[in-house]
Length: 259
Image (tube, rainbow, N blue to C red):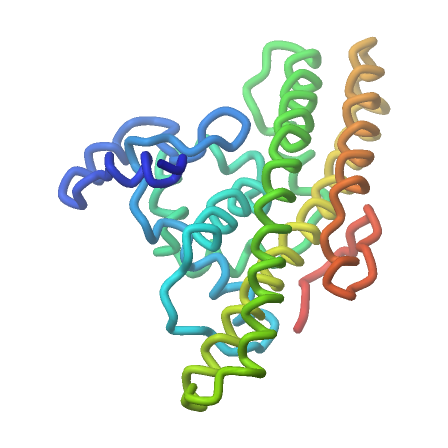
């Protein structure tokens, strides 16, 4: 039985969802991006692929997601969600895609946002801000290989699906269009994650540089090493080149991401 299948056996009835939302820090994303069993249902992150397609002006498939496609979206979410949003009391509502403004905001690039959140936090000392930065960087680094693994599996299945479309003669135009749309959704989801990782690296660098200038601490060296390791992990797990897309630079553009 797959990991996600085990999660599905312990889904939360919708009437009880409000009770969980009243608990501070409620989220399906546990440590290092593992899915918490209590709040998972099959469609919790379905919107991720749809939003990626909408932002690119691409069609959306009405086909049901495969096991691998579900997992791709589950593992993509913590890599596109801002680190400072993971402990929101209403995090599950955001994960279900019921807040459209939240989905749109995910497409906006602001490399200064992470530093502003660090500065707004109630830390007793500068070391606390550095430690939070280090933890967020390391958590992202741990999540990347697992996402890259499922992404490659989905890409392989999509290549086989695309090849099959050339030999299946009894498919209707609608069936063919939905299959191609799903391939596009999957690729755009992967591209979204890689763009997000490049952007958050730039945000981490902005935060670290400004912390060093404003509140120098010896622990800054640890943060610098952690960030370098994250960048190396990203470079070693690039998926876009396998899709025929040039790799993204680990430096974010400021301003909204346009189609």
